[in-house]
Image (cartoon, rainbow, N blue to C red):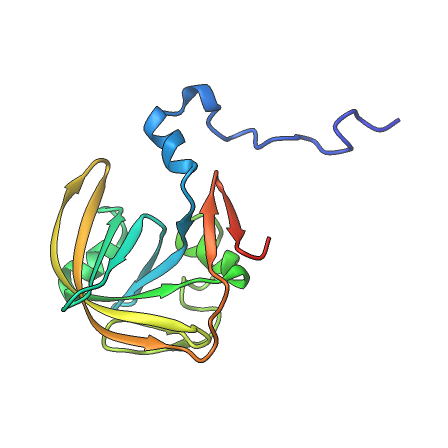
Length: 175
């Protein structure tokens, strides 16, 4: 006889914070679709970042919220530069590794092919990426607000579908 939940041990994540225990701000943030990007720096170091935006202007600017205790922040605070790469639906495992949600045997940069840039390593198959110079940082909520100037932009030939984070899961525009 099959269990009522379709044979699964748990029908939900047993480690997830229950909705009623999440802050109202966190619940609101979860209802906003966010781009999933990979931020990398010389060192090398990297971090998955979804709380970010790009502001057009002369010069263009990038703002993002990062973990000030991350190896990425340690590397950026020394190098004063980093690369931002938008990720696509095929990059979910890469995003999880750099977010610390999945093991990375041999280190974060051991798997896949990388192109070395003065801003940090960029995935070889990245459609587009930006090289940024750190301008300022300050504590903002429980994170560090990083402000940077966009110094270089590489736009790939293919306009890929973006990987999004919405309500605790990855999504893409084609699903």
